[in-house]
Every structure is written in structure tokens, then in C-alpha cells.
Picture 1 (cartoon, rainbow, N blue to C red):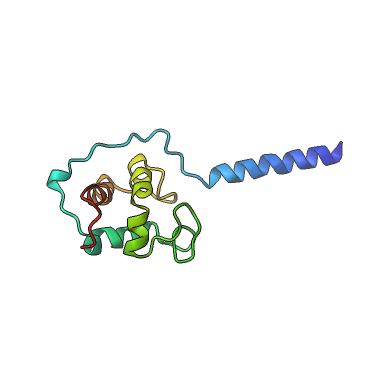
Picture 2: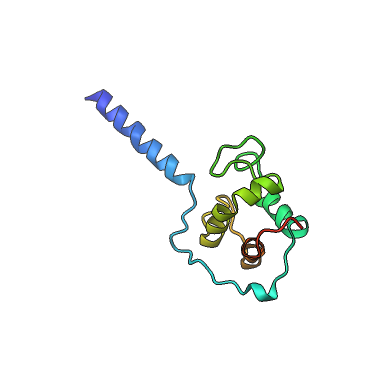
Length: 118
């Protein structure tokens, strides 16, 4: 009986820890963004924003296998653009922060414009 309680307790702790590592975005509604008023560039806005919010050591830095993998250069970000757009729009990423509506618009409008390398 003691082993069953120990394993059960370990399982409960594991589930609690696993759930604490994810961001709850169920209450966040994907917002509609008017991209006609926003001009974004990869080098000027998108890359610095992704570098500071996503390409961190425990998230999407070089060598990462989380989600779409590393997001440190244009090709990696371009190849993951659909996943990035969905995750940013629904608020599930970044996990350790919340992007402002302007930051979300920068990323989504850049992707919606074809994700140019500018």
C-alpha cells in the first residue's frame, strides 16, 4: 500500500509540474489586426522581437527542439511562420511572457505580408 501511495503522489506532483510549465491561453481571444496601418521589417522589428521573446536559452535558441525548433535566423523563422503566427495570435507563446497587442501585430502583419526578408 505504501508504494501505491508513493507512486500516486509522484504522479500527482508530475502532472502539477507539467501543467505549470505551459501558458494558459484559453481565455485569450485571437485579436483581429488591421495591417493596413502597420509597416514592419524583419531586421528592424521582427527579428529583435523574436530574439528577445522567443530565441532564449530555454525556448527557441540555437539547437532547440521545442516546437518548431530554433528561431534564431530568417530561414528558421520563415519556415516556422505559420506556427509562430498561430501561437502569437492565440497568446500561447511566448510561454513566459505576454506580448502587447502592438508586438503581436508586428509579427502577424509581417507574416501576413509574406514574411519578407527585409
